[in-house]
Image 1 (cartoon, one colour):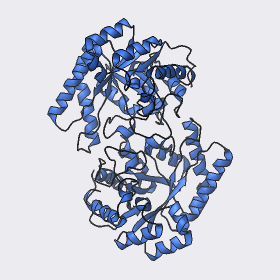
Image 2 (cartoon, rainbow over the protein chains, first blue to last red):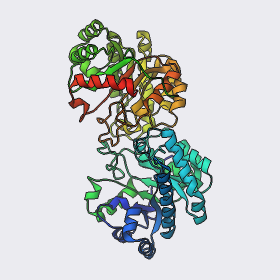
Image 3 (tube, rainbow over the protein chains, first blue to last red):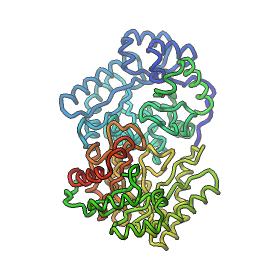
Image 4 (tube, rainbow over the protein chains, first blue to last red):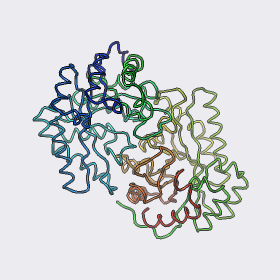
Length: 279
Length: 279
């Protein structure tokens, strides 16, 4: 079922990676809110640059809803020492997410450990890594949002590649863990509808939007603006809403050659236009 | 279960796309057989250039086993006229496959029709297209090998993206249809082992090998030589052999910047070396 059209921007969020090349976090907060965008998702490199207390104050002053902190995860590593370091880093990420009032900490699982080919082992490291920080996340009231990434990132970025896998992980890990659904990563999945229903309202922690371009010139940095590609976004939004999702719709576009080269105010304007016409 | 090491080249096949930039089909037949490679897979553009009768004679004279003709498929299209044209083209492909004694006709399903976003509809067009040529393929004794392609090709090349989907199609279409398993397309799939078992000996029509590079610089033309990437090829070969597959192992490497620029005789030599050490 295709979703009903959107009539206002009250649930629009923009991930600051969308204007990453042009704006600092402070500029993004100001730039988004100046155009009436009330949601933002924050990357940790921008957050570190701004400083956590200052960012928290700016976000609060501008009345921004923080739809996520990107990112925790990156658990697989060749040695136990490195895996512990990754777990420690996820602890800090939980603290930062709490400090800025994020609705969830997005987890990008990590790919194969350097030099390894054992995908099953890597996936187990992800499960173990999340389990290691889960009590802390629960205690802090910070939901962990596993983000299945497109299979083209399985080797070097994220070995959780389908909603089914994310749901299986949630089954095994229990409360405190959910899923971030990004249309870019899951639109191709013949099982998507069913797995969104399986996730249900409690697990659906975030909904990310952009588009898949034809041709796609780069595996990482050639995402499209909504409407410029082939993803049926209203269809997928319909599925997540039917499953009970009532949160924000977060635009996240990595686009080295197009949107990162445009005037960032114009990028925000186009996000807003497209949001009402093709999302 | 990882496969037992290979000790000779009796089941090595090379897809002529691997030396596409350097050799005509005639040169490939001569070049592969000169180094004792007994299997070859043929693309239709090279076949057309050579001429079907002449190619058939050359293949027979050199005692080559033709492990596949690439490719049929490409069924989805915006109009009924175009879909019928695609079906007619698949009929010709079946005839060509018979003429050169190919073990199967490889089907690359096709992506979304131009301008469309309806993935479910595209997948139905694929099923309808295969169904339309299936009686002819059966009568000709030419198995149709559905090749699930990596999800990064779902939009523009092939909307059949997992072994599960290919198996579902085989269930619905009945005898005469099977699957070509290419490690490049399926290595990431958490369900791979199970779906290979589900396919079983009768459906496993071809096994293609190459490697996934880190980084991958191009979505289409940056495949790696076996051993240069992160795919656990012996693991997957073990699965297909455990399921009963006894056919050739076909090297298919699209590599604009590396292997298509090397001396083709050297490419064949490296394929042979790697075949005994990392496959």
